[in-house]
Amino acid sequence: MVAGAALINACKLTGRKISELKAVFSGAGAAACAVAEFFESLGVADIIICDSKGIIQADRMKDEHRKALAARTNPRGIKGGVKDALIGADVFIGLSVANIISKEDIQSMANAPIVFAMANPVPEISPEDALAAGASVVGTGRSDYYNQINNVLAFPGIFKGALSVRAKDITPAMKRAAAQAIADFTGDITKERIIPGAFEQGLGEAVAKAVAEAAIEDGVAKAVTK
Image (cartoon, rainbow, N blue to C red; front, side):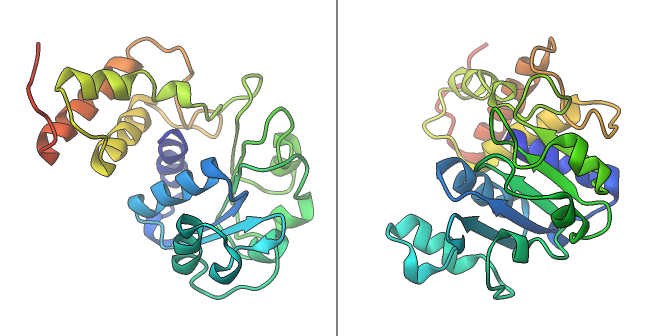
């Protein structure tokens, strides 16, 4: 949800349409798969996911979840690894290991790409190198850089919102509402502020309100409390 909020605002800042993005993921663990699926729900149609062996393929995935994800991603049938996938891509999402991509990889991407390198404590590429190579917007998982993409921005707001209406489930619509609330709370968007800071007052309440309203609209709220 937080990565989704960052993507929404990065697209606004760079004049991109979410539906037209080419997004490349480094990492195929639980976090990367969850973010990729959320990006799908936001409308990103061209997603490529890479693990340590290269672009994931359904025939080599062991579990059914990743097998299904592999089957519906990489629509252009790109072969190879993350460096091959990045050529012409608009967005890089790193949820893997340190220093896996270079300035040259960023330069191979589309003009002024979006780079969320979130490996901790050392990202897939440093913000300094990504910006020097032409990235338009950079986010990390670290607190000592701007645009920290951290799940604390979504929690506990999403749970407060769900519990306030006794929601029986957390639906995709509720997650999208949380992401949009975070994106909207940002206010004036700049390359150094595409999401709010982690401890900004009022953010949790804004997320909770949006999630509660989405739960009611989605028909999963059991009762509304004041």
